[in-house]
Image (cartoon, rainbow, N blue to C red):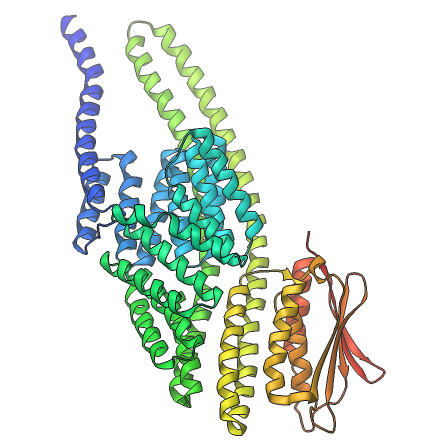
Length: 621
């Protein structure tokens, strides 16, 4: 009888002893993780290549010890090492693994933390739509599952930063004010400098330059005294961008150089590449072509080293414009083809990543449900073992527990099956929505090459006639194309903004055609409506492309609103001689974009010697 009691006690103690040993191993690994994290922190310290191998080995040890609560921390640490070294694709993969491991852990607030980190990475890479998705989800989780107002304030200011970059300034200011409210509610006075800088970004974009400068300068002494080079880079870059917009070359140049100096002190290569690119654009605007070329080449070299296709594409395009202006057409063409290839690759990659995000999220939902069910079953299993030991003495109690467990497992199985059916329906709906998004992006990506090659044809014909005008055309074209790149990610833009784009395009064309090309605008309250980006520019471009324009036969293009909610573009029908039949790709593209956006088609045809196109106007609300 005594031996049986000892055996039972041993069986009961064994799980506790094993759990204690496992906890000790996890405590030691946690100390190693904290030690490495203190070395690879933000600020004045810099990650080293050898830190990658050290962090990976630590990840392996944590996985082998089954310390599940430490896995997501090691993923995030590896992502930070990669990011400091400028290896952005590897950093993205590591942060994504941190999100997955946190989901498996079942801690929504930890998931929100890692989503915020991933969103910050997408913001750096100018993938603003993906950044907003991560930050919105992080804020939703924090508001639903926690009451830490400081974390909520951080998510709101992250959203504001992305909204500023996409030109949604009123929404950004609203999120910043809400972030300040959350900080006041939490009694948190830290990191207010970040909010100051974001307000400065808004002031700069609104043309309130002196207020922007004052906000950027406010925190520089504190950051200098603390050797906070990360913060100094942001302040100096913001000041430089403000003076660029203000039209003051010398202070803009000085602050870009200060920002580069700070970035090089802490070896932030990706930051350095972006700064070289912006400095080159400043020099190009002021016709300092030699300095601009050196900056773009430096930016391209760094972008190649850190694998940043976004900045590789921008640097390649700027070099193409410079070489075209200098008459070095072979080099210009090479860089232009590189720019277009990278842009197409980025569009394809972003679409693939969206698909992967959706699939991964759905798979994780299914896994989370299955894990939750298994966890309930394991808890019931441990209860069953205890009852089994006791049941050696009380057989009747054991039988009752066994029947209860069977019924509970059966209910859990039915619940899991119902949840899986629901997830499959959600997946089918989201796949259909994703196909519409991918189709719209494919249509939108046809626009830039169409405009670009037409403008290059205009440039080629102008070079043969007037080289000085060709150089001026190239610089104006570069500024306009930069605006086009900034608008390219938006589904709709205000009609007033589209009209400004059309005026810029007409300015370029009048350099070629002079007074033989006229534009008449007759539109009341353009700020009330929206249109797809480049809709009117495409119609004006088609009119110029397919009609004779000469002293004998000038071309007058009219844009007006014949009725509410409708816009009409018309021109005299005077087709070019011996022109091959038009493919109609531009009008077909525009029609399909309207069908996807609002379900209404465009209308075009001929009447009274005029060719016309009518497009629906979409209310801004």
